Image (cartoon, rainbow, N blue to C red):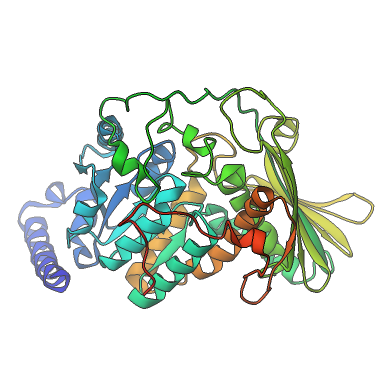
Length: 453
């Protein structure tokens, strides 16, 4: 069906070009199509139709980037909360004058053969299930971080990607940052000697979270679909609106899954390492002790690798000391001849005495720790995803590599939940630690399990 559609569009495209030439000849340049209209004719056979699943705080940034992509149409907005779809279409209309279809249930969208790719921006517990279902339906997937809710799901996503031969990119957009790519290459070329340690950090000033109170789901929310693969439970106040991140492990992956994913990925990339061989964690809740936040808000994790390399993660969700000094987030890479600090805005190279050797400001405008995110890196990252679908361009963050960075998040959470450090096979990423393996996967609602292909 898709091939027929593409052949038809190609014929229409060629015919339209002919009409355009005739109009120019007979009536002159005033009858030329606008640039936007012209782009919809030229290369229409390469047009890619996308659907958004999940329309929360990340949507504004991703939507602004999406409308900049060449030959890409947004066909659907999907969310389990009806008002989110109205808001999304309003934003879309303000940007383009267009509107998209809306649908609460992603399964119905996946049945539409005209949809080529899904931009998945749901809560964490939906990511692997949604991505795998999309691939089973013949769709490519741009998958926001974290790409999985647990270690088993990472294996399932990669397994599906290979079986269905689909393009899957994780949304760790700093992989598409020019200044970051530049400094990582320099580090790999020996700029600071042998890079042996990286410290990744995140600081924010998150406030109190409401305690959970059982109540009826708010009007317009399909609570059953929100829960998706998670075991069913009664709705509790404000769960659907971001606080699912802090209310236990049914839906979220803590601050590590929320933000460490980005900086740990940069750290691993800079050190040029794969899976660690050991993880240990100190984490606890230090702020607003009696509020509804049910997990750590302060974490220090240590990952050890072969060749005497290591990565440290420091996450302070509710203490913004570093926010005003280093932009709230970033990564420091230490080498035998110097060090480098890099974040989304710049990089700075230091010698062993701490003197600045080089400072490069990014030309990209990209969000730091503000909700919504988005910017030039996001646009470039999404364009890379589209180019990979259209032209087989190499992905900047292919899922088979992204899951290795994601594993560090899961290892940290597992070590916290199991209250134990544990060893890891640096080739397979697996562990034989019995306590850790209790948290390798999760319980699923019957009928929502992901089956390996």
